[in-house]
Image (cartoon, rainbow, N blue to C red; front, side, top):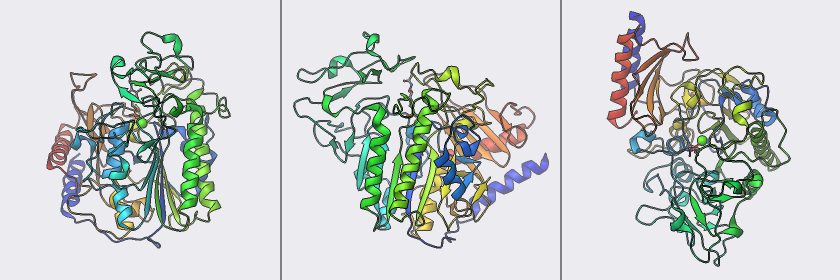
Length: 515
Ligand code: NG6
Ligand code: CA
């Protein structure tokens, strides 16, 4: 007991006092970097992580060629804050980033240093292809879907973007290439908003309102929310009108992103590039291409994961075809943990569950909770890094977090971060490349209604009021060395440890930075 307390005190002071080492173990310092990012993919949804029900041969092969982390985390348990943190190296709670509404402005101030800026500074070409959900336009000048939609990724370090602007369950249901809506028709102007009356403009195609036309939801019904504009037979969050010729097709979305990514890789094969490939899979509405439907016994959710695995295989294939596999560092991960019924009656909840059932599929693996939640299932996600010839292969139990990509890649590229940039991003390059088993000495986890501090074997959780739960619960403490499933809250047994962790958490939260 006293040992444990001492360990915490000493560990903390060491972490604060030591300047970060900026030495790099890398043998090549200009690899292409491809971040493959899944949406709501859980720890247990990948074969290499124990999934028996979902075949993921391409992701498993990536793991076999690379390093597979067992304690790898996304920065938050929901999409926008997680992505914000990965791109900026700043915790979402510092900027008050929450899940963004369909027409939200860009959540990353344009003067913020991002991971794309870093690669640009290193002379790379930089692109994002896929789901964005970090807002577009500004507060003063909201996104104009009939003109140039900006600011967006191009203002924060990316040279090229091809986007699903928000999420696939939100309007506008169109692709955006750089500043422009793809297949835009000026005779059918696009309006986006939260209020039906506000967006049904004369001259623009009107879509059924799910609130009054449930029968228009022919793909599947919404289970909660997702009942505003109905597009392609699927109810969405938010209203839009117009843009009929520009509407995406949900079932070919993976094909579209893969084509764009393959094309990007081929076009840039002779210069270093950074590609953020951000799949919509396996977020709701899960609508995999018919060629993937029925590939698992788990329904749409499992089949969407098979589709995502195919996408991963396609990116690897494009790298191989261009002779780039050896000189490309590929990461595979997810923006938050798994969820089942997230708004549509797609059969998932009946067939996939965290509780024991005959399907034996545990989307969060052995961990408690999932998307939205502060328990490990919320942020402990698959994390694989491959860089043939330059990385230790196998598995690593080091505690690592995507928020540290920015600083770690800066180390790899031998670049100093600008003063005040990426304040929560720490250099863990050696852990990411497998040359050290030493991960983070401590780490903050973030969810919609809670924050937690992981340190050594302990996890201390503090809840705060949220929209859905105005009265927060009492703090909790788990000993992960004995209780990986966070089943036994031991805060009453170890009040001194809880107190120390609480103090450290508050210091980190209020100091405005982690480094
Ligand atoms: C929630 C939505 C959910 C999903 C989530 C964002 C409702 C009731 N729930 O508000 O369906 O869209 O936001 O998911 O509308 S995320 O992965 O982008 O964070
Ligand atoms: Ca997500």
